[in-house]
Amino acid sequence: AFDGAKYTEDSVLKFSAIPWPVLEKPPIRITDLDWDAVDKFFKSVKLLLTGHDYDTLVDKSHKRDMP
Image (cartoon, rainbow, N blue to C red; front, side, top):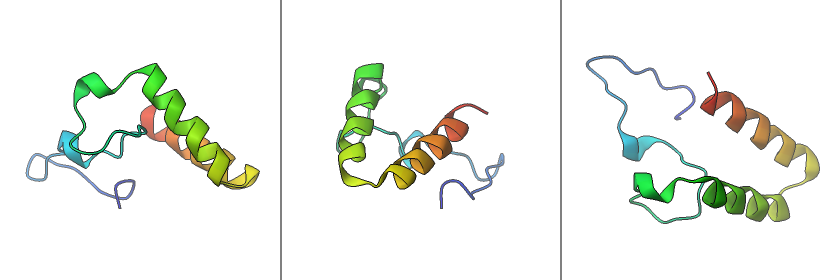
C-alpha cells in the first residue's frame, strides 16, 4: 500500500504513514529512528525470513529509502 501510493499537495504524506524499519510500537517518533534501531529491525527480521525473502526485503527497503 505504501509503496504504490501517490502523494500530492492534496494528499500529503504523513510521518505516521511511513513504514519505518524499527521495532518500536507506533506512534514512532523521529528520535526512534537511528542506525541501531534499524539494525535491530533487520537482524530480527532475518531470523524470520528465508534468505531470498530477506534479500528482497532489504533491496526494496533500500530503494524505498534511497530515491
